[in-house]
Amino acid sequence: MAGSTLTIDLDAIAANWRALAHASGHAEAGAVIKADAYGLGASRVGPALAMAGARRFFVALTEEGVLLRRALGPGPEIYVFSGHMAGDTGSIRDHALFPLLNAPEQVARHQSALPGHPFGIQLDTGMNRLGMEEAEWQELSADLIAAGPRLIMSHLACADEPDHPMNATQLAAFRRMTDGLAVARSLAATGGILLGPDFHFDVTRPGVGLYGGLPFANARPVVHLSLPVIQIRDVAAGETVGYGNAWAATRPSRIATLAAGYADGLIRAMTGRAQVFTGDTPCPLVGRVSMDMMGVDVTHLPTAPEILDILCPAQGVDALAEAAGTIGYEILTALGNRYERSYTGAAA
Ligand SMILES: *Cc1c(COP(=O)(O)O)cnc(C)c1O
Image 1 (tube, protein in one colour):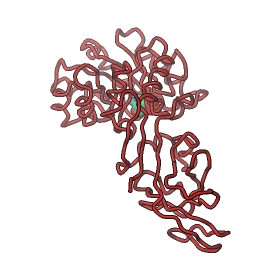
Image 2 (cartoon, rainbow, N blue to C red; image 1 turned 120 degrees about the vertical axis):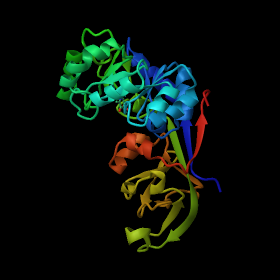
Image 3 (cartoon, helix red, strand yellow; image 1 turned 45 degrees about the vertical axis):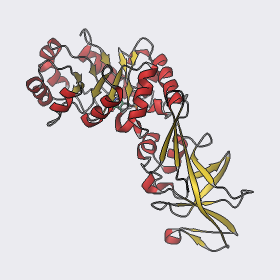
Image 4 (cartoon, helix red, strand yellow; image 1 turned 90 degrees about the vertical axis):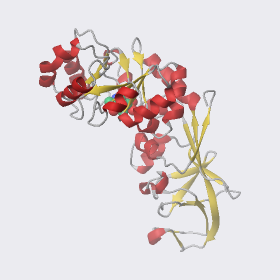
């Protein structure tokens, strides 16, 4: 029997990139494809975005950059958010990766290990996650600017909330630290692009919007996930389904058991809250989501389904996330590696 199928529309990813590039105005749109392109496969997504016109790629870790370089070949710039970490020197050099240096120790490491090798700079403007603090930057900026960084960037903590005062605070800090420098600047991820031109600077860094997720509400859907039915049974009123007897039938019911569970990223928090679909018709999950399976009430369907969809036009990534009490980013990056991944679109 066929397993679950995760279909990834590379044309939709390219269209989302073009839309976010357009929304970036005069700035050049890069592409964030960390965490294996948010779980969708960087070795397929990267070349599709390069074909669409992306020239600057961003990953979280040097190891991700190495794999991406193999997929992209020479040419596109690959920036690494975690910067130049101990042990990364050989990979950074051999695969022409550009570390985004985030602390004085990384600056020292990079300048002694790979003098002359291209790099970028990360500044902290208030998120307190990665990047040099203002005082550190003041100390080092003259030397670093003289060395010709490819990019100076910072990251917004609250860009998905347009009215949040943190956006203006971080924008002011970024300008204070970088105005007047002759270096390309980058502040906006998906949310920042949508905040408008003040946030765009020279390069934008869209991630989740490429993959169809909020806050890019106009994104084209990218993923479709179909789960096969293993078995269907009739249960009488009063019978229970699944671990812990967490659900009991209140009427005679037909229950389908689907071949995916929390080991596939369909997290246990979906229990009792998420639905699957056949076309537009919803079917509620019943009983606890278990590791490899979940139960679904299909009593109302006229025919026994062979496949039910959990990501589809009727329920996108963010709707499923809402039902699971999480965000689209986490749904995407949790999608397990037991799915057969199938790519569609001209770039496939
Ligand atoms: C993940 C990330 C991005 C992309 O953010 P999205 O919200 O997915 O668009 C951009 N910049 C940095 C530093 C990131 O960590």
